[in-house]
Structure formats: structure tokens, C-alpha cells
Image (cartoon, rainbow, N blue to C red):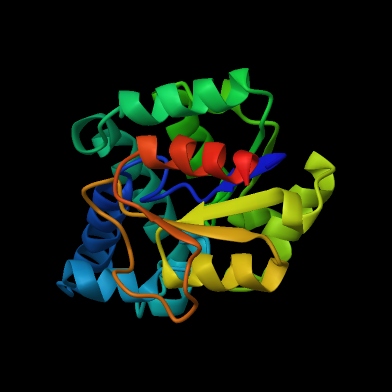
Length: 215
């Protein structure tokens, strides 16, 4: 395997709690609506400003987006753990010469903030945010962009994510697909496209890749 490309939220970082909290606060403040965690998850897909625009009834869109980012940054440290197992896994893959990338639906602003807070940026050869694509996952555009930049063929690469959209995007891009269930919060429990592997432990990915290399 020449390249491993990851989703971010719920895959590389347990950021779903801060995402959900930020959106809940926005809809509470601007629409006086209380959405459950599951209702917010149903909205996931596009970058945050687009998600707010699609679901907000209030006309104060600009203020609402600014408020979301304020909540995201103010509560990041409180709600997002720095997972050392994931950091060690990235370092090990990098040491083995595997090219690493991220394809996320997050906006570039929140993505860069989280990468800096978790000191993760140094591990990646390519970073594709929701702002960098025309069509969000489950469209394969982001993964295709990453493959091109990594100079990797689809059969030499794996995409790992936590949602059904991730599995579909990877399948459409023709790469190997793996489902991450190694964090406390992930988006999907079931998938419409069967992943090649389901990882309940971070260490499982290295084991899987080693077996692939032997095969």
C-alpha cells in the first residue's frame, strides 16, 4: 500500500462532540431550536458554513457562521482529546514511507485549527478540505484529488473513514476502504458499501497493512 488517506472528524480526531456542540449552540441562539446529537449528525456532509446555510431559518447567516467558529475554537480543548495512539500510528506509517493524506468535509478554517491544536499537520503529504471540492462526499472528488497529488493509483491506496459517505466515496474512487470505529464517537454503525476492514483498535490498521504487504 503506497498511500493511506483518512477522513478527519471521527476518524483521526474525536472532534464530533465539538462539531455537534457548535451546531447545537448556533441553532439554539439563532433559531431557538434544540437539536439532538443524532439530528445534527443527519445534517453532516458539507463544510460548516454550507451546513448552517442549508438548515438555518434565521437570516443572520454571517453572524451564525462566525458564532459557530467561535464556539468551535473556544470549546476545542475541553471537548477534543489528543489521542496519542493515533499520533503514534501516523508517525509509524510515515516512518515506513507510506504517503499520508486527509480528505475531510470540514471547512479549511476549522480543519487547520484542529490540526494545529493536535499538532498533526506534519504527518501529511496532502490535505483536502470541504472548501477544496465542488462535490462533497459521497462523491469521490476529494479522494481523486488526493490520489493525484500523492501520485498513487487507486489500487495502491486506502481510504479510512467513519461514515457511510466515506465508504461510498472510497468505493467510487476505486481505492481500498476501511471503517474506523476506534474513537468513542463515529458517524455510522452500518454501511451501504461493505468496507474491506473494520478497525475497532488503532493498532489494527498497521496489522492489516502488514498482512496486505505479505499477501
